[in-house]
Image (cartoon, rainbow, N blue to C red; front, side, top):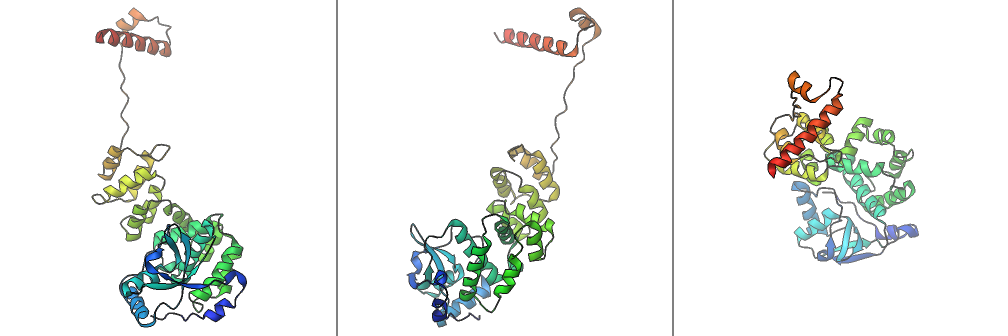
Length: 315
């Protein structure tokens, strides 16, 4: 596995905003980013990284920020994981002080895009990227600064700053995001909905057990209902028809009763109970009501009579 060499002198010669001291931090003091959405390397890719670290150490420093119990990793989750497997006890890191939540998210998202490329991300990971790019929290100027910094740290040969700047010039509307990533606006809209699924359902979409369009329907349901569906998914298949029925059966808050969820997943469509009507024969009607009586008056009279009857019956 080819890991780019890190030129510390060149890095420290960059503008003040990018100058950060590299520290050796014990691996046991590091924690994953609290909102990390990206899968760690496995298989051959992980094995190659472990072998490289055993032979050469960690060449490129990771980026972290202070947290209550040590440091939270922003960039370098795979290097940290591979270092622990390789038996390395400390890892070079750049500590970022005073980052906002938005800036921390930018580091995590942009580094994964540079390292892996959008097309190599899982569906739920793409959804996270699209959702964050579509939100108002991503400042273009700050993002460009972070991208330039990451190019120096991560892999300067893989992508140029001009390529990223071209993508970012026109803003992040659905149309611009669609053009940047070679997708239709409808595909962008679907990914924005997928990002609203709970973690468990996102995993089912990534694995293909739930289709993207079915996931879109389920994204309109409450988290509580989504969790019930995820728990039942081990015993039931969830196709587009069932997903639509679940959405149609939800109340205004996106909740679906457990009995209805099971009935739908079992392949049975929920049907509203037919209202029952009772006919009053003409003799009874004429005995108690005038021919001019209106339906509302008749209904109210019958309701009061029934209420009186059942009340006295109980007594």
